[in-house]
Image (cartoon, rainbow, N blue to C red):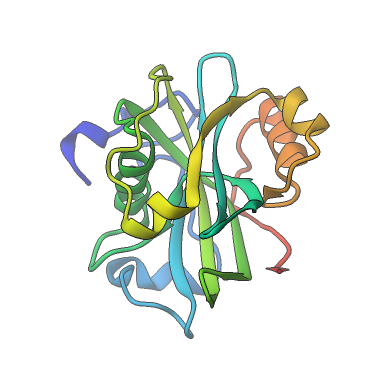
Length: 198
């Protein structure tokens, strides 16, 4: 983990020196091999980024070539090489939003999903990290060519706005999950969300 992402012994999430990240399930033993796909699943790290007002940052995505087929989603993406999920979360966040002043917290949720996008099916094992920032200006300067064709922007949402939204948001229960997070704090162990197949 880069020095600038190291956390104090007692961080803003009430975590211990390990950041409170607890790895549940079969992936616990493969921390050293994060870059490999498991069982054909793409390993993904996502970020539930909150600002000082507890707003969440979501990206506005769409099918390349069809901006009407759109949705909102958390920043993040697939692991590269031998990087850990924490490293991937911070890298993807920087590339997709320009935000680098981040306190990365524990893994909140895990989800497996499968969806069609850009002419192929994506099967993913996603881990959602809690993170906090005071940096609210975004600049997507590190997007891939595919992301440049499929990400229309970013927006900070309050929990109330997200609850009332008529737009498609992934994961589909994000408003409810965010509300629980803000009221109860992070779960003691990552919560496994229902598998989502689109």
